[in-house]
Length: 77
Image 1 (tube, rainbow, N blue to C red):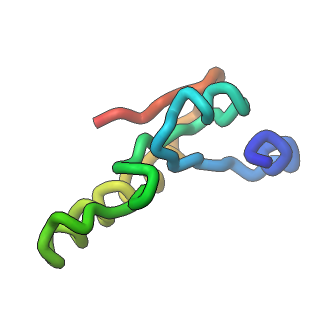
Image 2: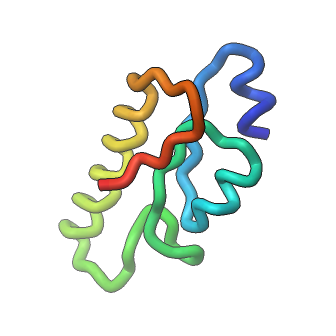
């Protein structure tokens, strides 16, 4: 689905826990996330720390939209 959306001219950021799958399906902008049951959070953290973690992941995704990519790119920390 990621590639189909990008074919229309809309950039896509794929946030996932298993980056090899994203690479296999052809996603161009990939943000690694936390864990399969909690991709955008960590229930072991207190509320404020989890909020910071989520904000950090979303900020990375927004940044990825601003980067011109010519090949698949994994945006690591």
